[in-house]
Length: 83
Image 1 (cartoon, rainbow, N blue to C red):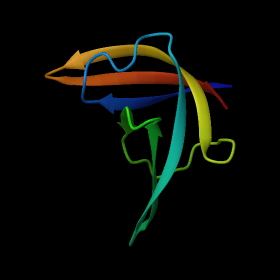
Image 2: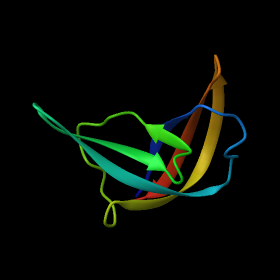
Image 3: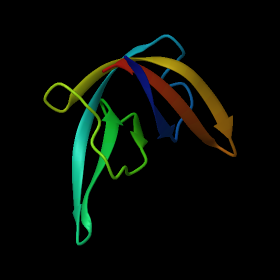
Image 4: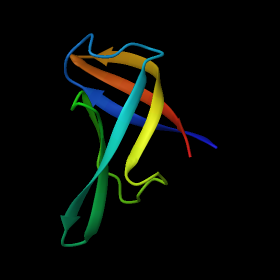
């Protein structure tokens, strides 16, 4: 099943549509439970915090950049991956 994750990138030109990227999972432990966030290696872009873990292979994903949009100096990257 193909899924997608949205990331925020602060600098232009680090990625382009069609790029193959590696994503890494990290866990933020809070008083109310764990939150998960994902980073495109090497710290190119980061996802929002998510309350549920995505299905993965040992915390790593490989995906393809579907789109990049710009809004007020931030770049929003949509990456699709196979679950």
